[in-house]
Image 1 (cartoon, chains in turn blue, yellow):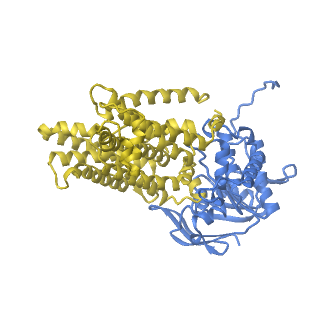
Image 2 (cartoon, chains in turn cyan, blue):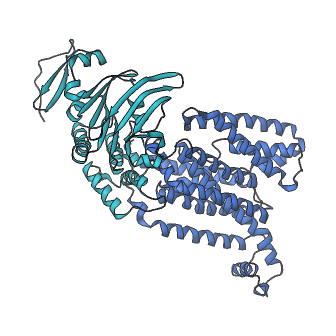
Image 3 (tube, chains in turn blue, green):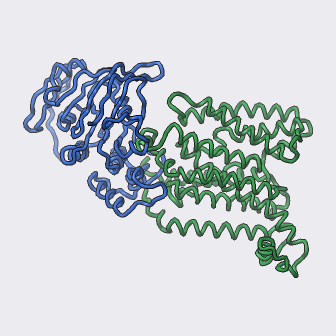
Length: 271
Length: 348
């Protein structure tokens, strides 16, 4: 059993976000959360990570109420790559990735040889190893996001939660990091729950999609069944075409180009 | 910027060096003063008192043991403990509030202490004898802290922006209150001003014991949670997902750091810049990992404030308030460090 949410209500102060939300997520799957800005993707991820408590209803993880888990226990089960990846003090990249091992280390223990090796491997997998001793405050946004991603992988948890974790990355690094996450799902039976802005990236990696509109879930299920032009139009209010793309080996979405696009007959240049 | 230079010396060696410098500073400072005590006599006097063997002081001037043990050491040790306390408290505040400009007084602890002390002086309260002013200062600091935390907390817990804002508001109100107290204080105004600017004059062994106890307890808590303090710098969501209890831990650290500052202020008056400057200097040495930063701050804060107090006590022709000296020297020095860090941060 992975996560099961039953009749969950949640509100910020007086502003309700979810009303009677129910959802089941099985382990060994790559879930993608898709929906317009402000529809509650981050709030849902926060609820799954135990960062916020539902006002009503229950969230169970592995058959146990999420509130019954201690913070430390949960940190060994669920890792989060947050949207905000600002780091306030000049830790080195390696120190930040090593923080992912904290939940497994006693409070005053130094990292073991195994921890060091593990962190080193994660850093070479995430292409962060060549700036391992640079200050995170001096890295570019994309580099820092990779360090934060690596930190969550170093936590080595059965569940990985990604909150738009590739928003600042170039396409090569986006593909590489999502591929790392996917390998954990398909090779090791881990669970990934990720929110996306880029529907095609989600379609390429996720086995299952959850389509959201403000405050509710519109549809959920295997990506091939869920991703249709009608649903995209209903959720985002834009016309789209959905088709299976053999090159991507996944369903893909295309949108109509704007009518007023300027097209000048200028020769392109290669450098 | 590379961080490799931090590892030039291992943490253990760094701490050992700082500890040796601190011990040497205590001994040198004990020898210095209006009555010059030969450096070699200081360890003998200490050994004589601590081991209970008065024969060790034979042959030196009779007044030396009293000068060293009853007058100088209480002052020197309280300066060192307060310096260490303010520095670790500052490091903790910077870590909790995610703001490198935070210091032990950011939440209005100093304004609260100053108001409490001024009140005791103006109302001429001697209920508790010599301890009246420190006790009022401490109560003022604690009440201010409670008020600021109450103002800043909302359903989401404590946000650093809210805390800083609430601290500024409350401090502004209290400083108006202090101005009023000074206005009505008549001839007592000089006493208030002198207290506000800080001094280690006429400290006793009971002051040393009291501050040592509080600072040690607070330091223990800060070191215990040093790893969580590291995680806070990743932001509250990441810290929480790595096992930090965001409802309890920041509040506990905040109260601990504030209580350390409150005790220091009530013993010595308001001494600025130690809590800001020392963590900045030490971060260059140890890096931002609070497990190394905290011990370095404790030792370096003690060294720094002890030297400042020794300059005032033994080198200057007239004693000036220590808060004035730390601000006059610490301020420009901080500008220098700040400027250097800015120009070292290329590409921003």
